[in-house]
Length: 188
Image 1 (tube, rainbow, N blue to C red):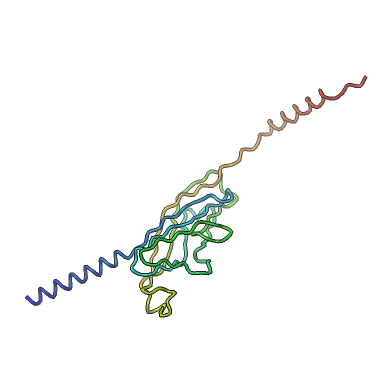
Image 2: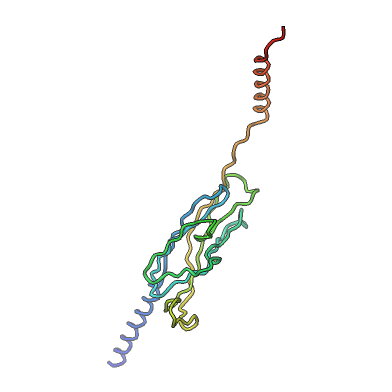
């Protein structure tokens, strides 16, 4: 009887621990904006459902075929750590000049106009049991885990600006020539 009771208590404790571990998650929503026609920028809203403090580390974009451009991480380059307290939502809008948001994707100049593809944008963050701003914070003793969350994003190269055809330019030039000759005063 004592053994059954011990097994019951142990299984409940394991259930609680596993439940707490599965509850330690965060969700992300990346917001996408077109910037300077050839660049896509990403802001974010991170909801920390952890019982600990999430400290954002970096973002990365995984693209197919070697990609059509380059991704620049803003989270890892920020001078101040972005710390998200338990049960809190933190948002950051994309701003290229200030380097805020998740990052930006810049298409290569030779990318065929209108090229589009899906990529995975991920955010890696650490979780700590104590607020990293606390005087008692110990980065080794208070470390809980490192996690990554991601979202699929769709990227599209800007469409080509139609250029006038050669014949259109020749016809326009000829029309201007005819108009200018017809407006000249006749000598007489």
